[in-house]
Length: 74
Image 1: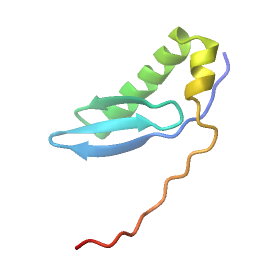
Image 2 (image 1 turned 135 degrees about the horizontal axis):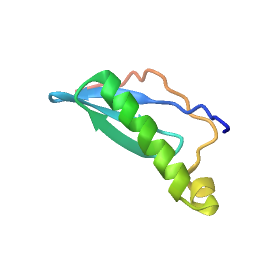
Image 3 (image 1 turned 45 degrees about the vertical axis):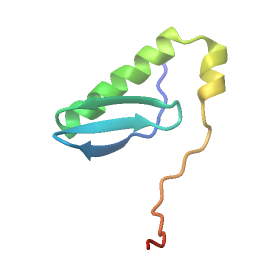
Image 4 (image 1 turned 90 degrees about the horizontal axis):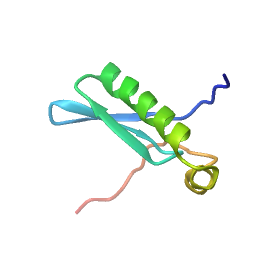
C-alpha cells in the first residue's frame, strides 16, 4: 500500500477542533487535537478511496504554503 503526505491545518473552534487538508479541500473535526487529526486522516483516506481520478486531480493543490499574515486593522 502506498502512502502520501498531506498538510493538516488544525484550529480550535468553541469546545473542539476543526481540521483541514488544504491540498484536497477536505475537512473534519474532533473534540481533541488528536481526534481531529485522526478524523481528518480518515476523511482524506475515504475521499481518496471513493473519488474518481478526475475529481482527485481537479481538487488536488500541488503546493500549499502556511504562513503568517500581517494586516492593518482600523
